[in-house]
Image (cartoon, rainbow, N blue to C red):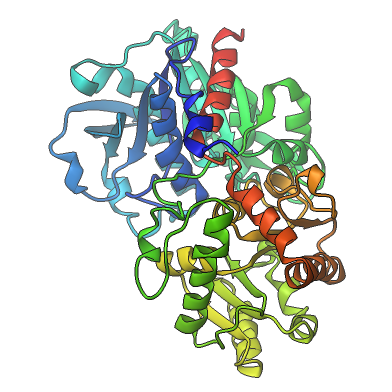
Length: 513
């Protein structure tokens, strides 16, 4: 196949229209990160800059970062009826204008980005959103402010979903920023910013803009819902995979907001996240350069040599018997019901009957941590549970395992299956959300291009059947299994293509009425 470089370089063209894009989020790696949102805020702006756009990423300053230097601008904002002073700090990183918003409310929440209850997060989101809207005038990025031409604001999740509302209520209703447009990226619709109806008056919005916040939920009763208002006011709503975009419009997957999504289906679409090859690449991974691990190419030779060396090194590091013939399975993720860890725990007897080794990395619910620990104690020869998180171990498990398990009950996009495929590790997944879009089920026919195994319902027997197929193929048809792994490696899973799709949505938004 063609090399990764030549397949992605065709996308590195200057976009048909140069946009001024302002991305706003509560977290951005490496400065602040609790999950996938932090990765997207770090990677998507960089990929959009590579396509010729001017991009500002506006994020809270939770403490004084070394890169920031001195304030480069300031503004006084009316937030929920009280004047607030914010300072702007600017740092250009990989061509992206990082703008940090400094205010005491952010310093107070350095250890808990989402602390302080729903109204606390809403208040900080309102402050961040309005500071982001105004940044185009007040922050001289590279010597001159962004200005207001070809301007697209991009909010992320419910924390900044108030931005599209503020843009219209405080600016466009007063003939300011009339041509600016707003997009809202939904990373997880389960988190919505729900609170009491009366709290809407604390937002200090004109009366005719408060109705969008009201939701009479059949389960929870009437209340204020920040994400609902953002979905209604944004020009475009983008979910983090096409499968998830479809799911959030269903009663099962919409968490009470399905009617809002279905109300304007044309406005909603889905784009799969990319992976950052600077951090995730078996060819240059710093965590594979010691302790017997080795870097390897994304081809058949790399799969047979480097990947098998990593498997042996992982078995050694974890104190498991070093056997190349035993299937080594991995699970990386939060220990909670969403991630389907209970399906694996409930399959202990099946797993041990298959003569496999299995390693877990993650933390979460105490009862699930306890069950994992007990499973390890019963099966010291075959099971290792690493409670907590280690970036190094995440990379080494991804490289050293034969099979990655992702039996998630719902998964908006999922990144671990993308990392796994890029490293030649074959995923076994629940056919849902972003997993449905990214893992092609292998049905025994190589011409169909399968890249893993997928099961239809989140039930232990369905999971066992799919995993059994994967283990059987690995044991009895290793060339076939290797071909599946290499097919996964040779997909274009980077941010270039995702950035192109986002750009198309932003251009559609620009011309929307």
